[in-house]
Amino acid sequence: MSLPFNLGEMESETGRVLRYEVEETASEMAIKIAEIIKKESAYQKIHQKFTSNKTILYFQKAIKSEIYGAVRDLCVLNWHKRNGIPIKNGQTAIYVTSPEIYFLLQTGWQDPLIPLKLKSLSLKERLESFYWSFRSIVRRIINYFQDKKSKWKYRGFLEKISIKDNMIAVQFVEGVDFERRSDLVWFPESGIDPSRILIYFAWPDHQPADEEVIKSIEAMGIQWICLNSRSSTVKNSPVWAPGSKNRTIIEKLKNKPTTEIEKWIYRTGDKLIKEVNYWLAFYEDFRIRIHFIIGGSDSKYMAQGIAFDLKDSQKGFIAGKERSELHWPPICILGWYPVDVFFTWTPRAQNYLVPNVNRISSAVATGYSNDLVFSGKRISGEEVKKGLRARGANYVIALFDNVHGSEIAHSTAKMEKFYLAFLEWLLEDPGLGIVIKSKKPSVIQRLPRVRSVLEKAEFTGRCLRLSDEHGRLPVDASLASDLSIGVGISSAIIEAAIAGCRSIHADLTHLRSHEFYQWGYERIIFDDLDRLLFAIKGHKSGLAAFAEVGDWTPFLGQLDPFRDGQAGRRMGTYLRGALQGFDQGLERNEVLKQAGRRYAQQWGEDKVIFLPTMKNDFLPLGKNIE
Image (cartoon, rainbow, N blue to C red; front, top):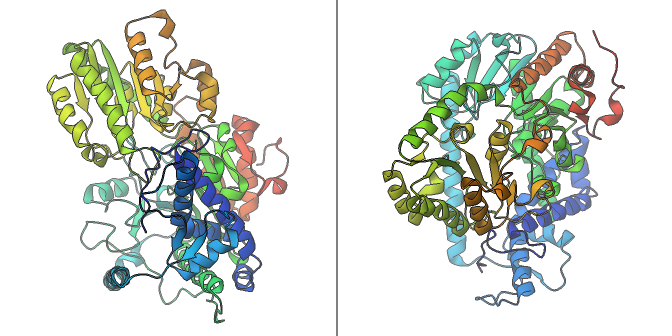
């Protein structure tokens, strides 16, 4: 049975869109089920193989992924009950087709009014499942042999890579263009020898790297490698895979599972062991001590950390940076940013970094990570604004959208309403200009009514849609405008505010528990589109009652305590100091202690947040460590 739903249109009892309730419920249930699974002998055997506090996090995240669909249906059924709305198909129970997931859910199910039932697949469903499983297996086999062929054919190239002691591995995701979002934003002023940095390409984390990207990397003196043959469009790109010389550090479990729960634990445990062995081999081959990742919540990021946590290889750590404003209720981001060191924009981030949902050891406040480009983009922003003014626009608005759909917090209907409100205003008001920086091309492509009105708006010459959206910084639009509007608790709006621009969150998800509502409701954040438009029109008209609309001045220190264009340099000096610690032969925890203390002494004790996972291991701050 298929339950109809639209999580961005349905609201929970608190008035928030239902997506938040689904995430919270799924995370809470996953943590509860994991606590029960911890008592199983099968889990204990797996846990004994590791010494990492991220092992249970790996299982929690895996459980959440497995049960998510059923939990979503549970929240949807409860929504129908609360609102007295009958379900068209008459469904009154939650159905799952996997015995493993059924028994997992049974351990944490606590809703006596909505039963959980195991349902057999129909013949058609079984055939479809077999078809997609078969396709997946065939694709994996083809990819395996392609990777092996690439590895064997270009092994000579691999052997020419200059591998030094204590290298930094960098996951390629955002790119290497310092005028856009960059994986290397910390590098230019770090003082780190570029030959000690290895960038790896691992499709599908990113679009395949082209020749221009690779030439840019090589021009910096940085080395690179592919982790599969689909990661680069450049012919004869070298591909790494664990070789025969890489020993299997962690052996798979040999006992035969006897229950459905044990089957799931063994299957998940075997996947974890495989991933840990892979990254152990990678760290060993390239002598990696610092692994800088850009990713979020994929299981491989936890496995990467676990590989560094093993007793006989505690010689490195995972670092990552904040990519977007942390605003989800903390329990929702279970398994996100499972790093040892997290470079965040502001000490306020500690409100969202709950120890039992990410296992971060220390958060280091550096300021907004891409702030170096702000000064250079002001001139181009003024040029864009000047062009719009020449066409009659005396007031320019920048619009930032978000991904939309039935599964997520932003519904397609609300996104359409948002765009149409501003575009139709532009068509009526010859003094209005609009600059659009979309999150990705598909956002507007999936809004046919908006596309037709957008064409008319662009024809006026007062509406500009920025191209090449992926990786492009929002300030390209906000610095060309008088006011920026972003859908949801928008990272683009935070960036605009830090850059000194007026900006407003159009929170159509109604997350009214967020602190921005206390800071400035209907000043910097609105939850009603009509009232938002009324306020903006008042500001455009110069009415005194709306003079503070979009003004973040009293709160800028809480968004970014520095605002000096030096966030990348701060990240880089921290990493350089950590690398020097490894060069001195120090163990990881001592390296992190020293790096954290040095940073706190230079930038303030409140800028390094030691989370409870390591708090007791750190010495008091105070004296310089030479």
